[in-house]
Length: 149
Image (tube, rainbow, N blue to C red; front, side, top):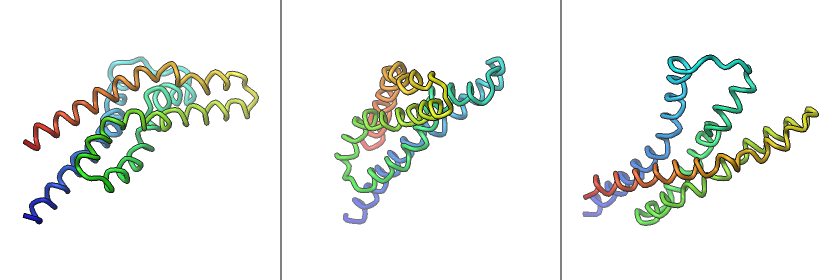
């Protein structure tokens, strides 16, 4: 019985680790398909690429959030991980905000006043990010409960 419980513990941890990785893997793949097949080429160079894909869509935040979430999942029981799944979108917010602030500070350091606006631009995207994050969390928890039963 103890071996069976240990195996179930490993399964919920593996499931939620995969759920945390999914946006970090799927989002770049979807953006690459969009960039190659559906959208016109970006005309603004690397700065436009950085602002749209890395900051706006949160690629940097996704990649930074994965190791943080994995460490949190490793130390939790199953009910705590389920609660953590609902709190994950709120814990993601600082990971989303920091790249914007750092990029804005880099702009300011190079003498561009637009950096002040960039440092606060993440607030405009935050409602959309939270809605998508909660939808993904709900799908993850629902999927886990369907598989676990």
